[in-house]
Length: 494
Image 1 (cartoon, rainbow, N blue to C red):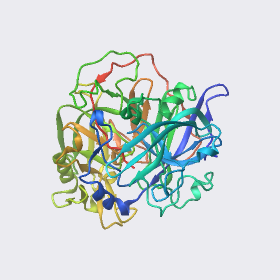
Image 2: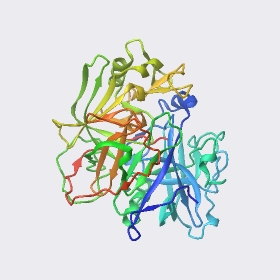
Image 3: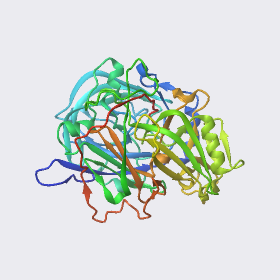
Image 4: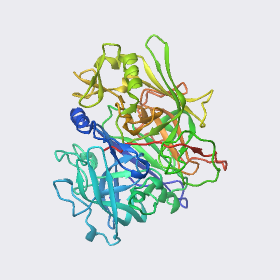
């Protein structure tokens, strides 16, 4: 049994699903993992030459059930990929330490035998696709395609933590630590690994929630909570948003669209046909027009882009990655000339832990179109959210800290100069609503986390506390914004 029940808007309406997220930090291992992946950039999607990094830090996990009766798995929540996968029963314990899916125990299992495989920066997963019932918060999607891993390399977490399948899944809060035992990808169908195997794209789980009318409104929303709130601290909602978790109004941005597979890194193009279709959409990415740093003295240093770029919104990546020169200049503005250094083994920036006390902030400027806007949507993230302790739960007691913005390196990680990967270090400050129906992303200041959106500060209240708040489905207009042409890459992280 999963840990939460579905919440219905009425007796006849499709379900609105609400699940807690657990933040699983591994700060003591973060540098070691970063050093392992540094310099080993491997393409996941060969037709698009996209590059990936494995996450070397904290993860946000959810529980899903697969099969009849459901076999429960704790998996990484990842808006930067599209496949759901878990280990199969044939995966050796040395590679899949938390157990695998028992195919013979499910009365609804259907193995189709099609190849499944993804290669990451420090490892890989390979197996076959299958179909079975996938259950979330008591609501089920039958015949959902997902990956069963027969082999993994350097993907799953160390066997010193407890997690995955097995045990009493109805009591997750009793676990001292929870480990990822797979991935729940929330990207578009064209991002599924099937397309790299010469197979047709298929509907990922979240899109089937809409297709099969399990949820009424085609949206999902993510609230991660503050970095120091460990355990079951965050939340994902399928089919609506929780107004108590954010301040101000949601600011919507169109998802940047991909033109063709033959032009993966082409520039920004004009508007395409405005039909509501998913072709051309891969990543949850929005148009970026610049970065700015507001210093402690109140001065603002702008890093304007030569042309409109793309910000990839990726809950599966711990850090935010920017071009090397920009990342270092930002660190210099935030931590001071002598307050940071580049760890060349890992490729990340180490900062003085006292930087967390700075009133400086980093701003992401996002446009509502493929052209620079006079009134961009601005997400501001203070220094306190960008200083990650490596040997303690708080920068106040840590002796070593990592900066939440990292350089891409000399190779650029396969990204162009206007390409940015926005990970958890900055996304935590935003409440995120991913709109599959209108291909847009809504953001607002997340309560309980320092930061602001368009000058509206978040509330200091701990948004995850259940105080009987109402979860409202999102209302939509019939207007569909014109699609835009662009391409970005992403590194999938665990």
